[in-house]
Structure formats: C-alpha cells, structure tokens
Length: 531
Image 1 (tube, rainbow, N blue to C red):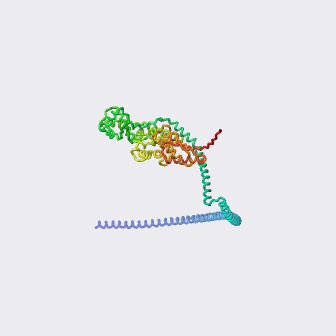
Image 2 (image 1 turned 45 degrees about the vertical axis):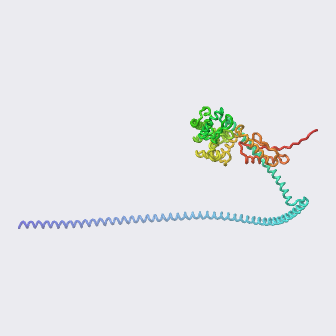
Image 3 (image 1 turned 30 degrees about the horizontal axis):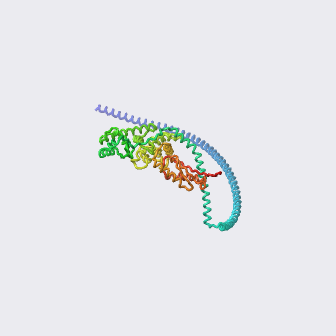
C-alpha cells in the first residue's frame, strides 16, 4: 500500500514534469515566434527602405534618360529638318535646270517647226513647177511622137519598104553588131583568164611531170600464144577437140584456132583469167604432154602462181607509192590491174604514175601529198572488177572502197575523176588533171587503126559543121584539129566563137583520151602576077 502510494507520487511527478516541459516548449516557441516576427519586421522595414531608395534612383535615372531622349530627339528632328531643307534646295535647283532645258528644247522645236513650214512652202512651189514641167514634157513628147511617126512614114515612102521589112532589117543589123560585141567580149575575157592562169598552171603541171620520171613503156596484155608447128596445134585441139574443150572449161576462156600459122588466140573479158590461160597454154606447148588431166593440173598450178603474183604485186605497188592502210582485198585488186590495159596503156603503171603526179601537184598547191597519192593510186581500181560488176569503173571502184572506210576525199576522187559527179574536194580535180597528163603523153596510149581513123573523121566533120568553115584537118594523131575559115565571112571575133563552139561540140559528141586542141585559121591573101 505504501509502495503504491510512492509509485503514484512519482507518476504525478513525471506528469507534472512533462506538463512543465510542454509549457516551457510552448513558451519557447512563442518567444521564438515573437523574435522571428520582430526580425521579419526589421527586415521588411529595411527592404521597404531599400525599395524606396531603388525606386528613387530609378525615378532619377528615368528622369535623366527621359531628358537625354528628349535632347536626342530634338537633335534628330533638327538634323532631319536640315536634311529635308538640303534636299528641297537640290530639288528646286534640279527643277530649275529642267525647266531651262525644257524651255531651250521648246525654242528648238519652234525653230524646227518654222524651218519645216518654210520647207513645206518651198516644196509646194517645187511641186507646182514640176507639175508645170511635166505637162510641158508630155506635150513635147506628144509632139515628138507625132513628128517621129511623120518622119517614119516619110522614110517608108522613100525607102519603099514596109514597116515589118524595116524592122527585120534593123534587127538584123543590131544582131550582127551584138554578135561582134559579144565575140569581142568573150575573146577579151578568155584572153584575160588565160593570161592570169597560164603561168601558174604551166608551172604546176611542168613541175609535177618533172618530179615523176616513171617508166613510159607501154605494156600490153598479149592474148596470142605462139605454136611451133601445125602438129602441136593439132595436139592442142586433141582428138575430136577434147583437149581444147577441157582447156576452155578449166580456164573459162575462148581459144580460137584458125588458119593463121603458128598462132593460137586466147580471148576473155577477165584479164587475169586470160593471163592464166596464156601461161598455161605456153607451158603445155613447151611440155608437150597435152591431155585433160595434165591441163587441169597445170592450170591449177598456174592459177596459184598468178594469185600469189597478184598479191605480191599489190604489196609492192603500195610500198612503191608509199600508201599504207590498204585492205588485203584492195591490194589484190591493185595487183589484178597489172593484167588490165586501157587504150594499150597498162592500168597499174598508169595508176602509179597518176599517184606521183597527184602528189607533185598537191605539194605545189600546199595540200596533203600523202592523201593525193592515195587518191591517184586508187582512182582506177574499179577497172579490176568492172567486167564482173554492173556500172562504170568510177562507180564500181568508189562502191568497193566505201566498204573499207576510205575517206570522203578518196571516194569522191575515184567516182568523180571522169566528171560523173560534182567535185566536193580539191583532190578530185587534181586526179582528173593527173589522169589526163598520164593518158595524153606521147606513147601513153594506143588504139586500133580503125578507131583512130574514125576519130579523125569525126573530128573533121564536127569542125566543118559551123558556118563559114572552108576546111578542117585533124593533125598530131587527133590531138589537134585545125579549122580554116573564110576571111570574107568570118572576122577575128567570130573566129574565137567558132573555136569555142567546135570545142564544146567535141566534148559533147566524142569520147577521147586526154585533150584536143582546136585552132581556127583566118587569113587574107592578095596575089598578083608581074608579066
């Protein structure tokens, strides 16, 4: 019981102590709160003082800034006003100058207007004078026409001719006078052209010929084979003609055995085939063993040799002329030209000659001599196959070389060296000139007697066709025709026209190698006899 009381007292004590502590804590909190509130009020007062100070400074700065801005604005306004005054002054000055120019221009326009008015008045006066003059001229023309008609009637009455007869007579006289004037003009123009071109062309041609000194021997393909005896001719024919039929079948040629002693003729369009047949027949005659088996064997052997010779000849010619880049087939056709002739002239040697002459002419003219050589060498290549392909040899040759990408200059020279197509490069006329030089030199070409006589007769007939011609003679193997005219009917001017007309008709109606010179002779002979 006593212990319990003691415990209660302690609990109360603890309770009291807790209450006291709580009260103390509350008092402390209240004290702290009061202290903090006092400090807050102090800081708030200080902040208010600081804020009042800052606001005062800000107001002072704002006043300063406002005053400064007012000053600057006033200064800017003054500056702008000054600039506007300057611009206004400049504009006034410019307006004054413009006004002066306009006033001056107005004065000029007024002066021009016055001048135009004066000119218009003068023009009106001139037109009046011209009108009066025109009327006067018309009256005079009418009077002149009337007088001319009257004089014409008087002349017709005096002459006894009609109006148409008089017109024909007058036109005839005028035509004769115009013919003479035209002939004199043509002669003068031709003489001037010859004078300008003769020296240069002669120099180039002579230099080209002199620079190339080729062999001028004329090689002709022989189509006959010598037979030692009639017995050998019979062996060539064989029993019932079997040998000659076998030979013709293998070679593709025609063998003509006639009564001519010691000769057998081999005929074929293909020159290579004819050459193979000629060589084969010569070897058969030398060997003496002539039968179909031997013929086939020997012809095959000769064919192989000729083909090899053709290929080798083409290569040698390309090296000789120094033309590279030729296709194997082009070289083969060049080799075949060795067995081709034209007017008795070997076509291969002719092509080589033309190539070198082309180079010489091209060098003189400042052109490409290498390209000119190529054009000259290939210009007649079509003659190697013109018997196999339809068309002229220039066209055939150009089509053949076109397959091997030859240059346009070369193709035009090949196809146009006879004037079949227009010349599109300077090398085509060069090839034409070189071809004529090679063909027209002495000994260059030969032709049969019958064709030669026909050509001379045709030349003379063409020359005699013109009025006023008395005689015509073809001389110098047909290279020149001399025309003798009647001096009473033809004067010097008409003689020049006759020469040109005859030359034009020869070019139109004849085919000939080289060129033909036309010479018209006119002379007056006075003959008297002293007795």
